[in-house]
Figure (cartoon, rainbow, N blue to C red):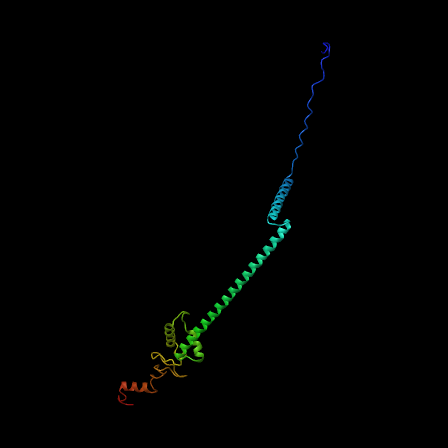
Length: 211
């Protein structure tokens, strides 16, 4: 049994160790924040690229990039070849259309000249008549014939005919002579001495029938 005169336990109660102070808050600049964000974004992209490469059987990201680059170049080459073929086809069609239009123009010219020749035009007159003939490109044979006949009436000299003078017009006179129908100068003037004889007749000095 313990002795009644034993001293009481005077050891102090255990004390909890002091808690460490929280770390000091660091302030980041805007440039540092942007750099951290870009780094995280790049790491995320690379991680995604690595996952894509491994998923499609590539050992590294570089192998996947090389394969994709080669496929893109091949596709662009195929498109360029197709565009080249399409351009060549368009050029051939344009040339064929131009040849067809030129042939149609030659045929129209030949038809018009043939009609004009049939009405008597020839030589230089034929060229002049063809230049003066005005008909639409889509005119039929009837319209062409009517236009050519109308031109012949307006310009008969182009078809070998002589233009008839207008009967109502006064023909030109030879050099130095008045035109027909115009009295000559002095034609109605009295002859020398006629005035004196007329005066003597009026005064009774000469008989009326005296010459």
